[in-house]
Length: 275
Image (cartoon, rainbow, N blue to C red; front, side, top):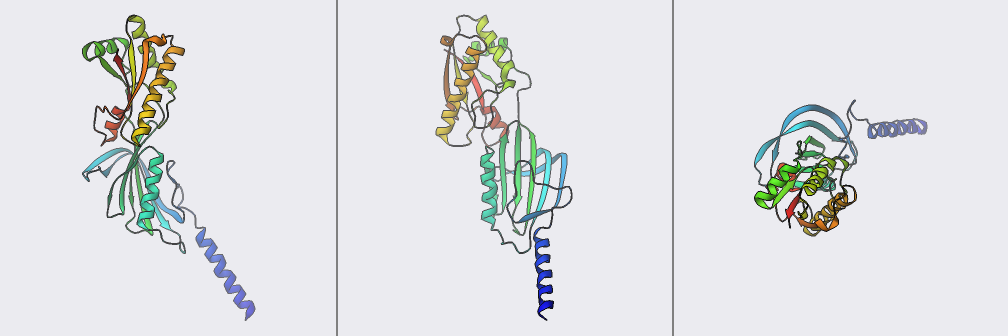
């Protein structure tokens, strides 16, 4: 009898271990930007190169976002402690904060909408945690708005003449950083060309951010980005330092609403202002 009990107990333990280690559905994996909450497995997934997803803005108004769609359905392993809705929603909120975004809207504390811009991509996600045994994650990614045609020196000169300032959207930074990315070189060359053609021209180089994050941090970031642009112009493109002065405006001078990702992309910019 003792021998039989040991066999039964061993079988149960092995069965439990096998169940706990039940693998994800074939061909499925976590999204590259988001890890799963512990204790869950993927029971199904799908990816569509281009599709639409319903998304709610900060006021609860529904719209469609389009791009690469990834859907992942998570199931809690048997025997794992149940997760509360708040825990699930806040875990994804913290993940999106690390991506430079955050929670946009939530319904019943269970249906949560998130958005962020990561590098060159705008990312939207919807998490359905009404039944915490089965959590649904839908993500849409698309290329964030970029200035495909970089304005040239003549356009900058015209804008300065008309309004005294001009936005430059061809200067790029990683989220939360002030290092000027290499793909900014085309725009920087045009700024240097402008200054070469206008030898008496002096400029304020003004950094701007969107409203994501803390105000003081954004003010410091915009100042650091402006200083980085000035540094590249003076050290790499031969512009006299006396002709440039860096300033940071943070989120204080938006040119579009920060309620949309497109608007935020427009607000993250460098401006040239005539001294």
